[in-house]
Length: 333
Length: 264
Image 1 (spheres, rainbow over the protein chains, first blue to last red):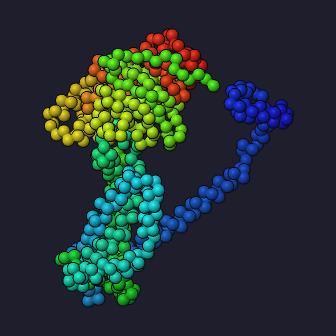
Image 2 (cartoon, rainbow over the protein chains, first blue to last red):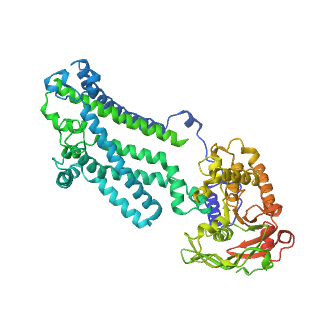
Image 3 (cartoon, rainbow over the protein chains, first blue to last red):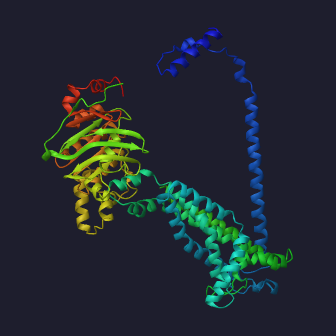
């Protein structure tokens, strides 16, 4: 069969497709190309491309694994040196409120920082979640597409603001207001919570929007067909189905709050004092790190103790990740 | 241009009508008309099948009957239910849908227990009497011919049931509200032949107490279980008669062509 015949046949088929007629083409008329049987046993250009592509991707992965491994290793070695080299008791580290590492191994207690870190994290998530869910519900259930897009861009804007700006705003606006209302310095967990609330709100909101959008439409239809109102459908079906993913969103928000350093440091007060209320100065793991890291000499106990705080942060972030995975698995069932 | 005027539309005595549409038009986006001037009467305690090719407007018509199209389309014309036009703005659609239930193409039980699926609407309504709820669950499941299969696992997730069981659960869930009319949108199209046959048996039994309107693509199914059949084409109700007449002696040329399978 010549090339010209093949062209003609193509024209016929294309015309038939254009005019939407059904034409039966005999397969044998199209013919076959001559096969070079040796090609089947020889590597071709594509084979080499395959090797290269795979090699490059493995190389990149290798570099990243090495990087992550060395970060964990470095933080681990220095963080654990406090316990193995300087013989600080682990239980003392976790339970004592006496933080003065320059005075010796008996004064390395991180409880104040641990408690404060957890308090600002939990409180900010607690305050932010209802607002985030409300905003996400508005965006997915009630708002017009235009309004939802507008809100989406505002949320993205909030994510993009550098944390030093949030800290500065907190220092200028939040701290004086707290000082005026509650007395004292105004620095403390309340100020930290309020600043973190604004910072984790966009994270929780946008992940909650994804969670709500992932609820299949047919659940809403089924509910509507049973005479349920929009609000009943939201409260009894949509939110229930989306709960695991909303919890995941909250945990991502908490991870962000737990790890935030600069903004918190600017409003928390940075005194290593046990927080018996929300408006006295205290200190978080991160704020202690940022304020003290410049004041210590590498290899000393004071420096190693800070690395131990860093290690604790690392372990906590791992814990948040595992929690997210566990909830994800449970939600998939 | 084909002749799209109705070939024959059957009517019933006023006392026999469960639901009536008068000059129903459905428009999407304000301009694209999907249904034209449809006036059909549905007889009490009967199964009416709506047949026609894809895009013929039968599903659009069905979904308009309990106002499920409100958010996506404009529906003009009257839908008469107990002497009241329910296609007007001041109608409480939530109450209307409790009287005119709906079962969808794809079985869509909630990811809750079988028991909670059935009681969902009642509880949303504020019913708290556990004894009453339990009675309604049993009655509804019995009516949907599902009770014997699930009575020992009412607290298990409804999603663990087979597709056919899920669809009968959806019928039971609609029955829990004690509706008068059940709208079915291709209820068997996602089911295997055995499940389909069980579902059809269930629907035939339900005819004693309920009025059913069913969209179906399956002509054999329409012939097997429906009493009346309406044929839709390009948004027009072309012919509406007893199922026997539609399948053995169609009046319209398009109806005949469709029944004989030359298109669609």
